[in-house]
Length: 120
Image 1 (tube, rainbow, N blue to C red):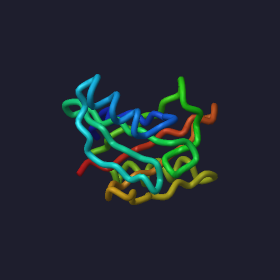
Image 2: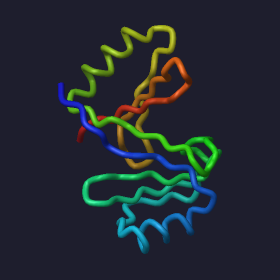
Image 3: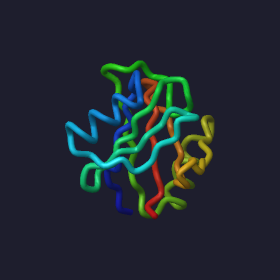
């Protein structure tokens, strides 16, 4: 099994300001934007970063200090089944996102939500 780091998810107060900062000041490219759920994906080289308005669909953490990340899994289906077997109480489901990614989430004992994404 190959596992690699795939991206951060960062809560922001204003999507327009955040996109401008990341693209104009940090030289990211805008890959995807969906205002109806307050989400944008920006990229630097091969590193994607999700920017989201808390409470609109991308997450509900407070802006200013908290970030999330996900793991890119090459054998996603097999890995998902293994995790599902070990987390029967929480039993995660695979979700297909608006931009057609397959993901599942698992919550650690401290309440941190860890996201795993299928390698496409």
